[in-house]
Amino acid sequence: MADLQSKALFERARALIPGGVNSPVRAFRAVGGEPIFIARAKGARLFDVSGGEYVDFVGSWGPAILGHAHPDVVRAVQEAAERGLSYGAPTAGEVTFAEAVRSLYPSIHKMRCVSSGTEATMSAIRAARGFTKRDYIVKFEGCYHGHADHLLVKAGSGLATFGVPDSAGVPEGTARTTLTLPYNDIPALEALFAARGAEIAAAIVEPVVGNMGCVPPAPGFLAAIIDLCKKHGAISIFDEVMTGSRLARGGAQELYGLVPDMTALGKIIGGGMPLAAYGGREEIMNCVAPLGPVYQAGTLSGNPVAVSAGLATIAHLTPDLYARLESLGARLESGLREGAKAAGVPATVQRVGSMITLFFRDGAVRSWDDAATSDTKRFGTWHMGMIARGIYWPPSQFEAAFLSGAHTEADIDRAVKASNESLAA
Ligand code: KE4
Image 1 (tube, rainbow, N blue to C red):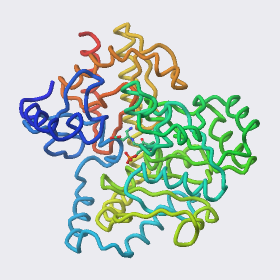
Image 2: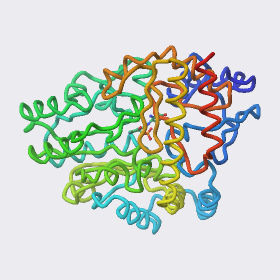
Image 3: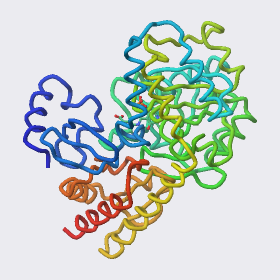
């Protein structure tokens, strides 16, 4: 239940901002609540405007892998800000950042910084279309790649949460060039490429889905995307905005040992600041202006303050961090699973590393059709119980929760206890 000061702020916000929030997923509408306004955050904690304290499992929807307000990241931002906020000219930091990204993602031979994951996926697709001179793109139902027009087709995240898989305002002609397939359906993928491979510019995929809840790839699914794209002259794009440096230092492509043609990054590499990137094979990126005919630009692209946050975050992406995230994730997964079983509640817990979802449905979730049968009403009451017990969990059945290096075993056990009590309520 939102605190009184949040309620007052929400009233004012609704007069000026659609739904009172600057992003729909923050609205708490899917869980029948009202947004909690946050005053500050530190480590694994959020503090609301009335002083209420929560263990945070949203982590700003992924970026806060080190925990909030990590001292090294804050110091880097302060020092960068004192040198000026933005110059609109190249800086040494952007070169160092590109070198750091290249070392984390060897498949990224060349890259371009942008300011959001949406810009990263949108630009990667434009580059792929410009390089191949083809129009059609393939995406997978339930995957969300940001809010560019051509990607708001059978998308996940907030669209799935509000049951509107397609957005108003997207021209029919734009949506027509987006072909959608079920996630994890290799035969359907093979059939589409057999029929239309010569028309396809790119296939974009969340290598582990977070935006219909956490859904891992079936064995061979990601490799099939890469191989079929190669066979038909299309471009494979891993949207690693969420999985990048979440599942491993080098993201899902490192975890699964795969090499996509292009990658979109965001969230963690910006350390919580507006910094994202796209890149891949050199011949594709050499199509991008000023070298080639694919135009893409941005006033704040590679912003020096954001780059300082990204570099300070990347410096802490150590093997020990991922080992700890795996250990905490396994503890949370088994705790949630055992609690649901003991309560006799139909539920499935799915996790990859420090991305995790409790689905209120029986049986594995392999695609959007599976996820869509979840009991979202039951999720809503459970979520309300978690919030009431000081656990800030993503306010949608169709999102992944995240852990950070700042979480402790005690935090995990507190979340499991809160879940067990919420399930029993
Ligand atoms: P942004 O434009 O929100 O930075 O990134 C878009 C995006 C692209 N690709 C993936 C795989 C993503 O998960 C996202 C954004 N994720 C959502 C939450 N699932 C961000 C939260 C929000 O929309 O407010």
